[in-house]
Length: 221
Image (tube, rainbow, N blue to C red; front, top):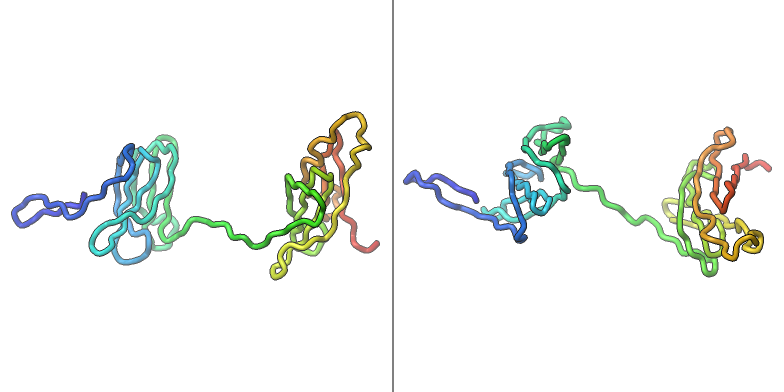
């Protein structure tokens, strides 16, 4: 509730917020400017639903604005202080053995889709991918593993063109491993690292009971 002391020295309710969830349990509240606009927001620490409920003033009434998940935080107290030197107040939550910080004026990180790729390999079923510079051009390439046809496909990424096919090769034929009736999920893991010590990234595959190394050459042969 938002209260004021009226001219008769009595408390008067100006505004009230009711949480929609029945298990809500608000254990603390602070006022802080989080959006950089004039006027403070109200942050309610709700351990019942494990969230920070942020209310913002609209038309002289506080309304729900944002919610921040805090998990099972062992809340003890909340404080306001400028922790990153940007001249804006930040919210600090103290708990038993840990603390959390909500910085003002910052939005949560989001993922942006920058490229997509559909393989031309028939019946391909990709299960894993790694990224690294496999041709020494200073740009990361993408290696994807196909367990159905047991191939490795390498994609090149360009900012304006997206992901493009560079090459693909079959790691093994199923009949090569005749000890088993099934070829299994292979190649099942890949790593890109400089194994040969020449400052060029190499491709390492884990396949059946073997570790396969594909060293990067100098491009001159």
